[in-house]
Image (cartoon, rainbow, N blue to C red; front, side, top):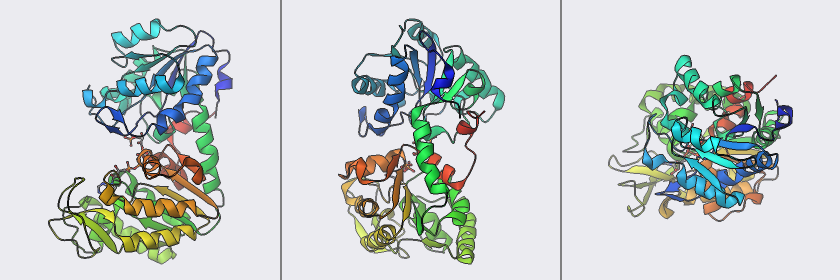
Length: 396
Ligand SMILES: Nc1ncnc2c1ncn2[C@@H]1O[C@H](COP(=O)(O)OP(=O)(O)O)[C@@H](O)[C@H]1O
Ligand SMILES: O=C(OP(=O)(O)O)[C@H](O)COP(=O)(O)O
């Protein structure tokens, strides 16, 4: 992959940096600034080289139009604090404000553009529509640095198409992430266990297909669980469920059994009548979820079983909290798995914005893990051995 060194002398040049600043927010308050901190070294390096640094990033999944709830402005404020220098903010991504802010940048100064996903072209499946938006982004810069590891699995304008339009290079974060994750793909020490949870179920279920070929055991928690339980014929009440994936999941279970790969499901679940911090929590058997309750965490018996399997592995990759850790009553499963990862005699990797936020919020330090990856979906697809569009476009 091309690196920043390949871009030559950057003094006075406008460099567009794609960062992953998709941080968890409570209102306008950032609850974990890990992705901001991870983005700073590349931004600092470019600013120190005298570039005019234009940062582009997304926040959440707005629907291709401006939505104040997903403004990057609070994130730009936090970036300025962590960088220790002023950061200008453009109230649009490629419009008059962006052009004005970029034109006003001096050498070594930094600006953040408003949420790139406020523009329908960013995530469009139509190549021409995405390309037209990438053309507009490209007008704002002389070179492109891809540093948002968490989005390199997305074929999106600010990740992929832009790299076809400007001299492009991988930033330090992307290079560092790839370096560590390669260790998990090249002959991992066994047993190799992958723990999957979280709420992006439809996005991430597909990775199981390839991971069955690579890992010795797959532990399923979080919102992932319920499509599996439904595939086994159980009622999952009002839990998160991808009904159209039930047949696919049945196929995974059958193939894993054939290959001798353990797909381990929780045997007990913490349920509540509503998705809220103070909903009364009870623990039930995984095959007896009441029809008016939703599963919000794996139960204590499952937490202990998952912890034993994790701690006994030599290589562990974990993406996706085991429950709704943001609410104390549903954080125990995530805490049990996190604790077990710290005890692994080998390589333990936590991936994903919320998973990283969870371990920090539950009192763990980053250095208790082998690596904390900023990307969940991106690292999972990397481990699958898939070609990631945002990396492939930087090659050559
Ligand atoms: N049983 C569940 N039902 C609903 N949401 C869940 C459940 N378990 C975990 N979650 C949610 O999953 C979210 C994180 O999912 P995801 O974005 O896939 O992880 P990451 O950002 O680490 O890749 C958390 O906000 C958590 O509350
Ligand atoms: O949060 C992210 O991914 P993750 O939850 O898989 O870690 C990235 O910012 C990508 O976001 P997206 O999954 O909305 O494309």
